[in-house]
Length: 115
Length: 116
Image (cartoon, rainbow over the protein chains, first blue to last red):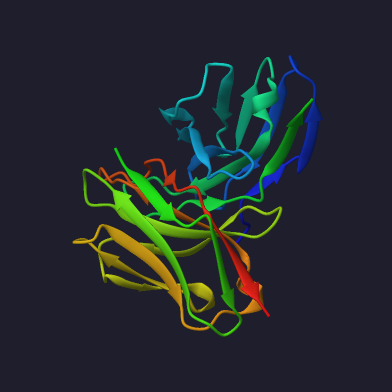
């Protein structure tokens, strides 16, 4: 069984640029959630995709957007990068089919540095 | 709305000593609670979870946690610390609406240091 994978592992961008982060969900999972973890903080929920539809969003501006593909992999796009966007971006997959006890399994993360 | 508070951003224990990491939750509905561990430069690994079955939950690597509704707590313990336990630990809460895909709300984390 393949776990959650993310690419790239590290990324350096400058202010104002755009970035795309990718996540492949665990086999059998149809839900992907994205989290931002700033240095020294706990992860903060950005949004979630369930069967290719956005299914909940945290307190992040519209320049954070996402996509989920038919194979349930997902992308996180951030436009007009700001210095405060520097963080570890974590993707988690789960099976969202009305299973209350389901668990989110996390990938290794993408470390984004904005200069 | 759900939230968790982790008491103590840094905890140091001697190798072989008891590990106790504290987590208190706030939830308007019966919560699901989780403990995750994060090693340096890595993602989050699930240690254990409470999903309204047994109140004492056993996880990986010898960790366990007890759900106490009266105290709104879900503290993580391990009887004997090992050097490999040094990491950041996060408590998280999730409500449930029957669909099981609600967001996780994390605490700010506790960094555990093991003293040789």
